[in-house]
Length: 100
Image (tube, rainbow, N blue to C red; front, side, top):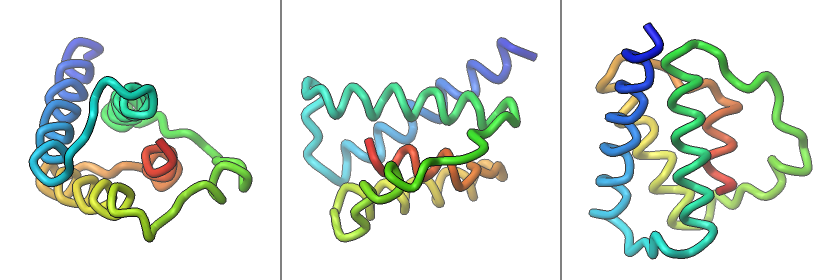
């Protein structure tokens, strides 16, 4: 089961990154981009294992800027991929992706 969830999470992360690259100019050398990939990988791994983050502190939630094109596109891609795969990304994990 661990190998299946890890390979599914890796495949989803690769699909997510490809979608993001196609729609936005992302500099993957920036520290914030590397942090995003780390958050994405961990969130997807938790998602396929069914172990979401239970709570995101308000101070972290306050960092989400839904006017930012990257946040908007990230939210769209999350919805597209999870809908296509028939899986659910817990709200708290989605929030963590949006602050990356």
